[in-house]
Structures are given as structure tokens and as C-alpha cells.
Image (cartoon, rainbow, N blue to C red; front, side):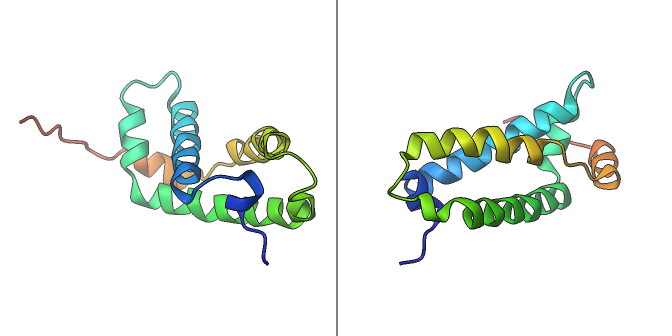
Length: 113
């Protein structure tokens, strides 16, 4: 059986997607630090999100390459700690200045009901 990220961490796909979204939020929060109103622009930018998810998948595949053999031999909590520590640090350091600047220029129109 092929090891997937879900069975490596003993998570449902929904629970893992929640974690992925949380990491995306943290990434955008980090980029918007000190710049008012940037968070919504960054989160709403499709091009930036597509780039981030492409990089995320690359990092995720690399993590699976390194740690797939540990499935069932190491606790999911330990693997999750390694994932959050090593994997997310590398991901959080990535930047695509052009996409970030374009996202910051996006005009968000609030929709009030």
C-alpha cells in the first residue's frame, strides 16, 4: 500500500485539509505583518494561493519521500511534530515577490448584507 500523508499522520482528508488551510493562513498572516489590510488581499489572491499550493505539494512530496518508511514505526504525533517543525519552516521562508506585490494591489470591495 502506498503511504499517503493522511495515513502517515492518521488523519482524515478533511482534518488534513484543515491543517493545510491553517498553514496557508499563517503564511498570509506572516506576509501581512505590519501592513494594514494586506491579510484579506493575500488570502483572496488566487495566483498567490496557486503558487503556494504548488510549492506546498512539492514540500509535501519531499516529506513523504523521506518519512514514508516511518509509517507504523513512529507515532503519528512525532511525525506531525517533525512535519510542523522542519517542513513548515522551509515553506514559510518561500517568497514570490511579484505575486505578493500584485496581491497587495488587489482592490477588495466589502460586501455588506
